[in-house]
Amino acid sequence: MILSGLKIKEQLNESIFIHPFNEKQLNTNSYNVKLGEKLLRYTSDTLDMKKENEVETIIIPDEGYWLQPNELYLGHTEEYTKTFNYVPMIEGRSSIGRLGIFIHITAGFGDVGFCGYWTLEILVTKPTKIYKGVEIAQLYYHTIEGEYESYTSSKYQNNNDVQPSMLYKDFIKE
Image 1 (tube, one colour):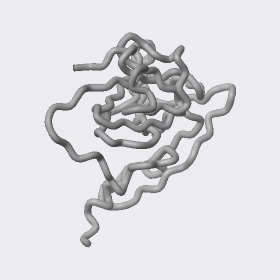
Image 2 (tube, one colour; image 1 turned 90 degrees about the vertical axis):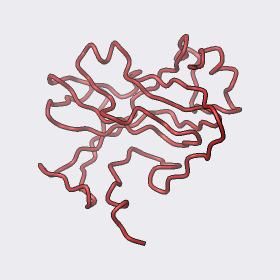
Image 3 (cartoon, one colour; image 1 turned 90 degrees about the horizontal axis):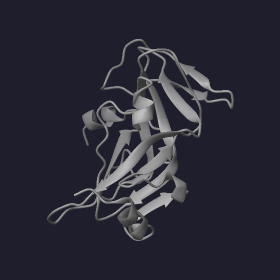
Image 4 (cartoon, helix red, strand yellow; image 1 turned 180 degrees about the horizontal axis):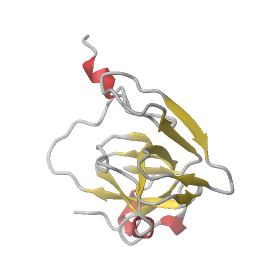
């Protein structure tokens, strides 16, 4: 089951934490999150999943920033979230999708116990100007059945910023 907006509000500061929270961003069954000011872009034309790939940082100016097709940008939400007892999910807003902006490639599924800023995998179909602070995506929450262990990833848990892939850490032998 997906939580209603009223249930999300009821669970604030109990099982669902959103900071900052603005009631105007609460929908009937989701919460809109805003695009943060920082983007990362991989600097190489090729990527190696066994290595830490270099990125450049882009700060979105007040006048906006032009995203280019065939380029992956990693962004982040302005909101820091913590979720317990529910499965958090993220999807692009339909108004954003109708501009040909994809905000996640495959990582829309969150984990019970995730704490941090959401990293967005942003692609555009045409050159598109974006602005920091735009309500770019929506979080929604599923109930979970059965016993579970909370998310404890050493790669992404309690992050403070946009994060590039850390898949290379999976190849490190301990």
